Image 1 (tube, rainbow, N blue to C red):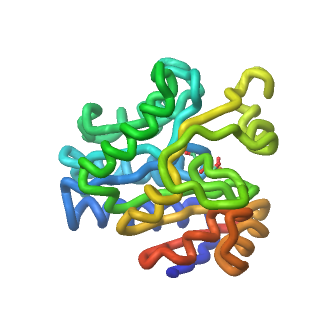
Image 2: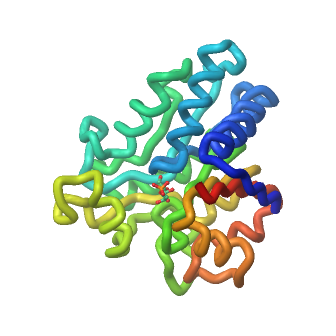
Length: 236
Ligand code: F6R
């Protein structure tokens, strides 16, 4: 594991964007695994900056996102498709047809999960997966559990995750109770993994996940077994 501690969120974002853009430079048609949440916002802004400056070309890149709420379509301003369109895709020269987010409004959610894993396979797998980490150690929506779930699946969200995400909805009642998430198999199969975390509040879970025992009770801890893991942490 490559653990990088930096002093500011700005530095974290610049480092993460440099790694992602480096991946695109090495392999212009690479598959990027992407995340939503507050952590990658700075990274996405820097990626767009580099794209505008002509330093990186996303025209051949494909992307697969980690997760989506069940019941929210791409037009809903709290859906992860909406988030990605607005915070990254519309700001870079990626072909929107090459961007994939699980369909939270599919008639058959189980079939959608299977199809998503097939899609990732058909793209040749993920070259670099970007992750944030939840306060309970979740990655994607893989919540603490007694085992690691491998495939893309539907999850019931942990009350603490619903609470944390309720800041974006009118009330916690409005937060969807289930979501589709890539499983640990999909994440661990990525050739490279980049996890970013910032803020004093994340310090305890970062210590547990990367310097504590590997347990499904702290889902991110499995990443210690990944052969190419970079973690960037900023306390501020
Ligand atoms: C989002 C996702 C989540 C977040 C995590 C951290 O696609 O997969 O696991 O990465 O909840 O969220 P933030 O960055 O808002 O602290």
